[in-house]
Image 1: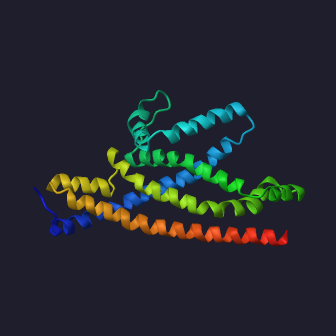
Image 2 (image 1 turned 180 degrees about the horizontal axis):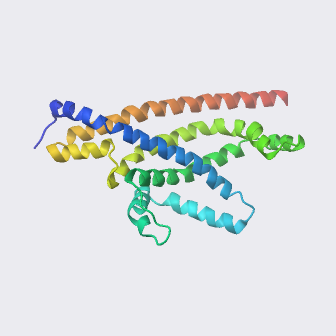
Image 3 (image 1 turned 135 degrees about the horizontal axis):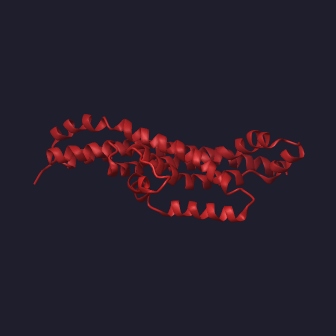
Amino acid sequence: MSYWSWETFMDALPIIITGLNVTLGLTVASFLLALAAGFVWLILESTPVKAFNFIVYWIREFIRSTPPIVQIFFLYFAWPMVPYVGTSFTPFVAAMLALGIHFSTYISEVYRSGIDSVDKGQWEAATALNFSVKDKWLTIVLPQAIPPTVPMLGNYLIILFKEVPLAATIGVVGILSIARSYGAQTWSYLEPLTIVALLFLMLSYPSALLVRALEKKMNRRFDKKKMKVKVTE
């Protein structure tokens, strides 16, 4: 039976921290991909062809309903075997694509809710003023649609950060992979895995507080806007 050892803890800490850049890098890369792909889903489902929209909708639902780890395994192990289009990915790229595409299906709905929050009168005013499509989106719609989505996007970033350890299953050398390797070499898993948990807590909890503060700030701002509208009415 092994017990807690501060000596082991202090020995493992600097070793495990070296994998933090990979964990954070994968989180940022996956989230940026999710932000970009979320717009793609939104555009694809906005086409006037109903049959095409139906296909895109069910592809997105299939991706959303499938566990991320299955998608990571598929891209890394199975995709290279697909005839004609299959290609091999490095562990980092496979994990980035799987996590980014998976979370993009949720982020597209965040974008949609932000756009739907723009008052119909704003759309009608832009049309009455003969705004081009580009000017309508850049000067009227997006400045009003993006702020309400910031807290929700922040929440998904935190969730994505917590899903990144799944990449260790295909060999991405992040903090979990290093901790597992350290435990296998020393037969001491308690201390390294505790360090991993503490690192995730230290990074995700302050981020959650920040997102909560942003959400409260946005709610106060929109409450003030509603009050102004009622007064003018």
